Image (cartoon, rainbow, N blue to C red; front, side, top):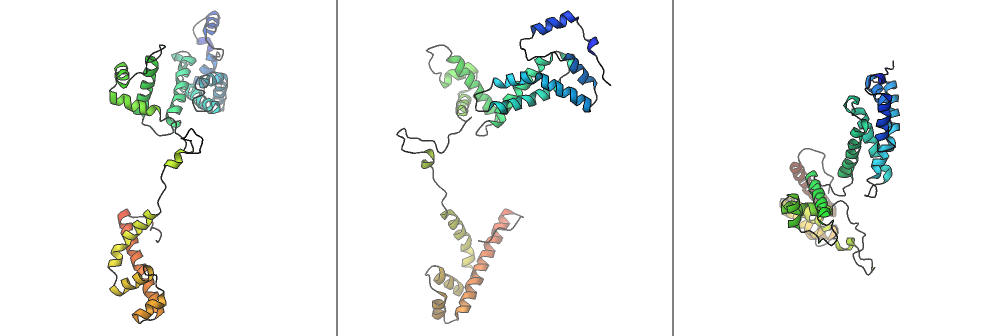
Length: 288
């Protein structure tokens, strides 16, 4: 059952018309009656319909607020979606008895968009404290250079203007360049010779894995019997065939093959067991 509480609101029709005339924007509709109905309804389809009607009525205002943040690295479509989310939150939390909806919705929507920039738009994750320092430094630099011919303020000037320490100002100034990152394909030479940032960076050295495996196998190799160590040395370091090793030791080639397989398996198992003990319980690492 709908409950129309519009007759209980204070003020004459002339007062309400005057209030509408004082609204600074055309996208601030008169939805006081709808909010009264929304507050009186229990959760259900009827309340959802009234809520959707309010969202539709105030959506142009949310889009206008989103437009204030255009050209800051985010598409206007995404900003409008964020602003619409803030509008829905404002409608759900608004108490009609506490004043005009616009005065509550504007800071709610604006705060939602600002949180989007704070939490989603940084190329590098920066702590909130550093973000706040960045904003204070940015505002201070703008205030100190707003007069034509003003020199670029020093760290000491900004510290005196903001009440921050010079270390805090330095941190904030470093964060000014952290909102976006430089592509690895960006050219560093003005001559246009294709010299990019990626060309200055090192690459992963696959030999590191070999060093790790070699060091891990050392202890296991030392614990092998002397003959098995000699067989592995002749096979893998002197590059001798199994038949030559067999001839030198006076054993069969099949025996050499079994000794090599057994020795390698023993060293491998010892290395994997040691690594498993260091990592704690979990899946067994792949065989090396």
